[in-house]
Length: 309
Image (tube, rainbow, N blue to C red):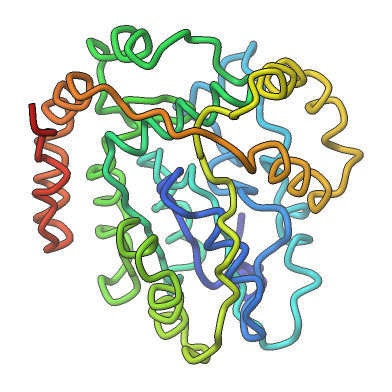
């Protein structure tokens, strides 16, 4: 991508992390009259345009259908933006690669970066529960998944589509702190977003230079992990319908797909993580969480507190 398109590129980037509220943030931002985000989330262009070092570079890999690799197609996403609107790209995979920050900075050095952080143990468990429910992962238990990944190299240049490695975020965040002025980076935490959604959205609005008194409709939580679908028959049908859902995806409007998802996952039962598994993962992530504490000047000791026996 050359510099001539700088003025048409997005002004801000919500870079992740996945399962930390990014889908809801995307929907809420779209409500603001001074902002524009495409209706299709996670175009992931600055990741997908060059898959060097990505597991998706493998010739047998399946590139997600929503990834946009062509520059013209990416810019076309922003063609409907009203004149004067501040445009944004919400793509959680941007916080799963050490290469993305530099790519964005090369063409939008003035870009504003928004990152949402979440307890890595909760985040990886949420990812597993959601994917298991939706038929995207057949691993019988979370403990099986942990055993499979725990002895692998968890600090990687690219953690796309991983579980445990995706929880190691400090070195990805560091690339943004190195590539952009600190004043251009806003970091929020999932706990704050869940507790005071309107307040966090007002903070983001101030950061982006738009009306921070705008009242967002935050009643609906988007892409919630929830848990196990209460009706086991419905849950089994939903999980096994994945091939059909994939085939129909290009033909069904996102609003219809979202409505179907909300209906199916409306009644779920929370499945808590086993205390011994949480304690084990706390130790896996301890060093990374402590690094994140220093980088963000945030007390994250609660993330490292094991459950009571």
